[in-house]
Length: 244
Image 1 (cartoon, rainbow, N blue to C red):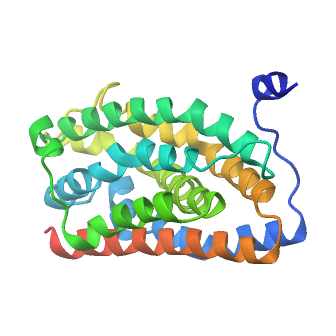
Image 2 (cartoon, rainbow, N blue to C red; image 1 turned 90 degrees about the vertical axis):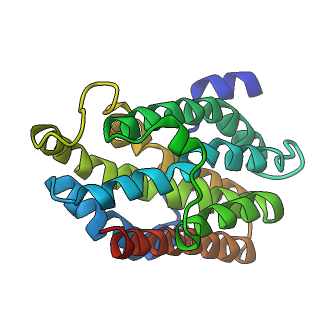
């Protein structure tokens, strides 16, 4: 029976009142990421090359480490003992490999803007841009499963999937200005996140609904998602202020 449920995938359900309030209360923070000047100017094709390169370079550790953060959450699952852990285990296993593939596609995007693979692999982001990585690692190592899912797969993927949709259309301007190589390889990461990742935050929310069995766990998960978005904003603010 479990194998049959796994093959069907994760079923999305209507939100109960607490879940709808949880989602709605995160929207303002999520929108501050999606509507950040970094992504507004990327989408318009006007973000300066130094800022663009800084964003691509210093956010690479977040992308490269993302499947590792998910693996930390996977290690916490105890199917059969706790609600939602079986579903979370299957979902994380099926998506970790996908996220690893996305890291390679991100490399192609960065290299399209003249960043070398060596620069990506040895980058040391400034503290304000690296704080999100420390936070997600902490959530994966020490927090509950629902907190880890909320911080990573809800907060980070929700915002990223939405800003990717607006940024796709601005890439051709950089090709036309001769500062980037835009082709199907350098666009693969953006296009994947603008379409495929649409479902991920909804699926993560479904897992949170399954694993959060009382008000205390719901409050912890909400706080984890909110702080993840706040760290995302902190990184973007620093990138925009310091890179030009």
